[in-house]
Image 1 (cartoon, rainbow, N blue to C red):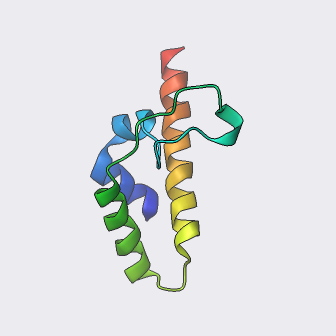
Image 2: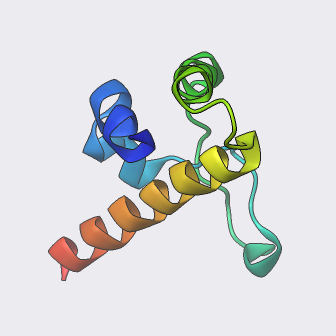
Length: 81
């Protein structure tokens, strides 16, 4: 549900080129970070999923959203080859 909502709200192109927070991760300290997704829209996705599944912690929902961002980035990189 999280991944489908992310595609519906942001689109695949945006998901491939943006990050969840806009900060570089620990593994990529020397690189420039991707721009952050619109935090208002991210919160709407988190709230929607939280209302549908109240027992699921927010950190798991954010992890699913990060996974979708990574999947779309990898897919775009493969298409560029």
